[in-house]
Length: 115
Picture 1 (cartoon, one colour):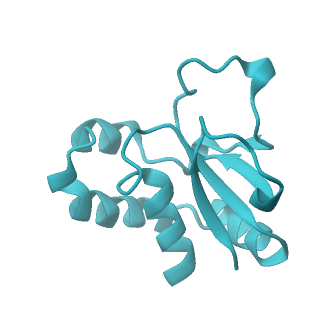
Picture 2 (spheres, one colour):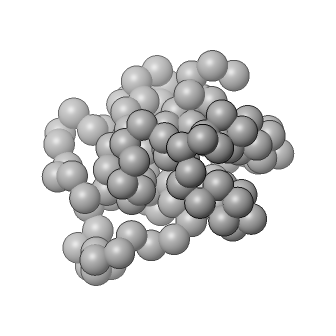
Picture 3 (cartoon, rainbow, N blue to C red):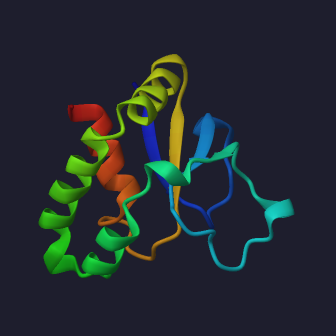
C-alpha cells in the first residue's frame, strides 16, 4: 500500500493518486468549488472531543494517536474502505493543520499501515 500524507494547501500532483480530505472541519480559505480532492471523508476524522482535548499540543501527541487509534477501531467499515483504496492505487490523505509531523492524517496513515 502506498499512502501519502499532504497538507491540503499544497498543489495536487499526479503521483498523489486518490486524494481524500480526512479532517472533520472544512479547511479555511478554500472554496468548495476549488477543492482539489476526490472526496471528503469527515467521518474518519478524530471526534470533536478528541480534537478539542489535544488542541494540537505536541506533548499530547502520543496520547492523541493512541486515543484516535481506539476511535478508528470502532470504524472498521471506513478503515476497510481506505485500505481497499490504498491497495489498488496510491492514496493521499489530506489535512489542514500547520504541524506536518503531528496531525490526524499522519496518525491515520500509521494506523492503516500498521494495524
